[in-house]
Amino acid sequence: MHVLFEELVRLARQLESTSSRNEKVAALASALRGMSPSEAAVAVRMLTGEVLPAYSGLELGVGYSTLLEALRSVEGVVPLERRKLTLEDVYSALLKLARIEGEDSRRRKLRTLQALLVDLSREEVEFLARFLLGEPRIGASEGLVLEALARATGSSLESVRRAYMFTGDLGDLAQALLSGVRPESVTLQLFRPVRPMLAEMAGSVREALKECGGRAALEFKYDGVRLQIHKCGEEVHLFTRRLSDATKSLPDVVQQALERIHAREVVIDCEAVSFRDGKPVRFQDLVRRVRRKEDVWRMAREMPFVIKAFDILYLDGRVLVDEPYSERWRLLQESVDPGILIERLVTEDLAEAEAFYEESLRRGNEGLVVKRLDSPYTPGIRGRYWFKVKPAETIDVVIVGAEWGHGRRSGWLSDYYLAVLDPKTGEYLVVGKTFKGLT
Image (spheres, rainbow, N blue to C red):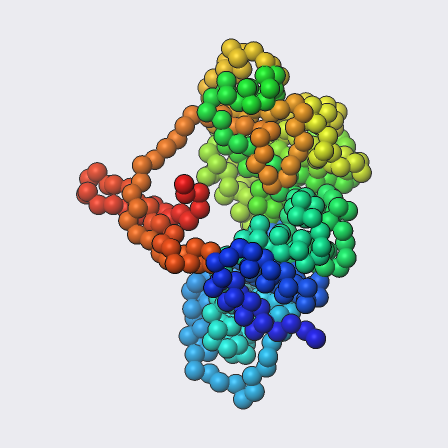
């Protein structure tokens, strides 16, 4: 028996109306147990608003305007016979949408979307729209889904979290676990990106050294594009911090990887930076290259990227994430040209460390990343192993509006619109909104 899309919508409504985290976990775990592995993959992707895996390179390409036009065009249309669509029927239609490209793609996407919408009820359309726009807002957070997967498969939460570190995609993880794969057996694979390890903030170089036990490795902190390089022989793939495939956009980085990374099979963590007049190019300009689909070599000539490698996760069949940082650095040195290694200092001397920090700032960088020498590599986790030190940047804002929350924030004004004062007009200008990180 296939799961109907309307069943997923009922589950989404249940999660949205439940404030208890335990009840949410129980409801989701129960639902997942009743699904096939492939259905579970689709369900968790939709419920979390990540309909397509980032590494797939596919984009739905459906924004508010296209969706609104499709909705208006089918309003009042009643098919002679409305089919009850399964979860996988809907997902197949979305995959078809994502694969439409080229000339007249908008019109063809619109027709595909219209054909899907006419078979859906009003409530199904509402939730599909929320899923498509990446805003389900039902309280199905990443952490909650991991808890539900652990409960549904009788696995420890710790082992499921670790498995997620290596898959990087909740859908893939759900499919694997519900197929009977034990989370302990999930590990890093070539050409499947993992979430990058993150650094905690430290107020000063002194504080960072203290957190690292005195002696630590200090690296320049560039405001560059975080890239994960996967290489096997002559094949290279590049993945961004969000696990999107940027290989086609950055042919010069692929070329550097082939020429300057000597290991046959390797996964390297790095920053891609560019320089103009001896100073680093701003991140806002760099990211234009990552998103570029056309004229990529022209952009590479105008803004050439340089690799700054700082970690190695995999080498010739050996997963290295549990090795200490000092050993990973040694293996990295053996695997690449010295010219692409990040600027680095190992010291316990505060004066020397602060001088290195000032040198990084003088060169136009953000500051330093200070690392424990015994640090493992923890994908996607901001543990107390790495610390970033940079000049504080703060901004004073005023809350000028709010929205009612969803899920566990239901009944609370939890989404706040933030504004800054325009000194010339005296008006408050909205610059963004927040619904996380409040204390």
